[in-house]
Length: 632
Image (cartoon, rainbow, N blue to C red):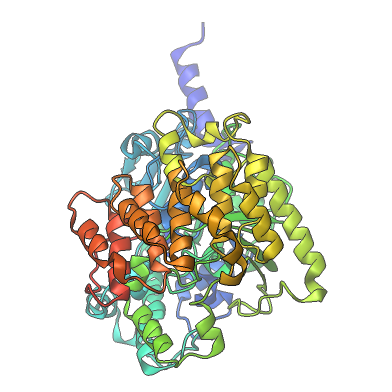
């Protein structure tokens, strides 16, 4: 029989060593809502980010790092589970749908390898039973959590989330709030003036806009200062040379047209890894100022951490292991996704090879500047909408307020602000075709759960998980549904004819995508189909009936369509009410619905997303103040 001393020695050895090496401490520094364009080491000479820049000069800087989502909770869902949202059904912002019991937050697996896991302190994981999920993953998750609470000599995995660069600071909260929470916390020499940077070309360069946009630079500067203090503590505690440091943002910049938008400005993030001397052998890229264009996504972080800790990666994690002995082969493209953000529904699927990004917009009847309350309460957005009404914007600046094309193709190297869509350029047809094929292959392989309307997701989630449901061919005939959805956004008479024929399908979801696709068709194209659209208003599947009613009202102004839309706005089901009110937002004539929307907004038990949509609707008519009621 083994002695107790032998057992204890074995346990200590297993905790302390991986492949003969002491297990590394791992520190994650996660900042909010930041694109690499605003960090000094990524080439912005106006930025003041010396701490981040030094970390990059001594470590590895990635130019091909992408979030799997464009707003915090879907992004963090993929980070913590290692599963992309389109497989799990967690892509809609701040939803609480169940996930399978066998899927854990990845720090759970680090704990099994002896790690102390701490999170300070944002979670926002977008799953049901989040408190239990958090308890399972973390030894401590609070604003007091840190490596300092672990047992002596215990390796740690510690996350620190910095909110100073959050959208609330960079745009959404009132300017006076920003002054109190950002400006007043900066030493005078650190403050960045309103004339000390270049404006992105899709914004009008005016004093009012510069006043607002300076918030981005100062918020990131404050973030950099606070990161410096954390690294000083790591050094003071004698842990710097035992700790691998990861720095990254959770998705793109918290400004209009970036965060929440399915283009590079929504997905692409700064990402740096710093290795102490004793762990430099773990880096396949080298160290000390190395820049790599290797593609990484947030799907890769969980398996990489599990491997670093010496654990076995669970089967459901399909991302890459980025470093160490079990490093995975690099990939030549990533597939990314954007879905509902607060009260603004959307569905975008994107492919990037690091240089180019291709985005397929399945709901292009909504503009890049779609109505999202947390965006529209911002003074910068109000300036932009006022300038639009005053005809003060140039064609580029106007374009982000109009319907999108069904496809974008941008060159991220030559065109970092993504202003030149290359889809119609013949010299890029091969790249376009390749990325279309890559997207289709991934969608068919993953059986994307978000091609179900959120109303349906809610019904399914009452009894089972979306992760499992999407795999059932009988319940979810994805190939046929995806074929119908792939018409959505395409415009023209032949496409419309096919979409109208699909309104006769026996499958609810196919009919939903048929009517959704017809939303993007022009008035002349729809004119011959009045009878079909009137019939679709009586469809037994509510998402079809709602959408058909919106088209009939816009196209034919039938009284019945008004009554239908009013009824659905008042529906107790949040998914249906939100769908109806969002359709109203993009109609020219809103007056018949004002009293109904006021009444819905006044109903105390309505979910935030429904109330927010109501406020956006009433705000377009100058009937409500731009009050802040929620923080993304």
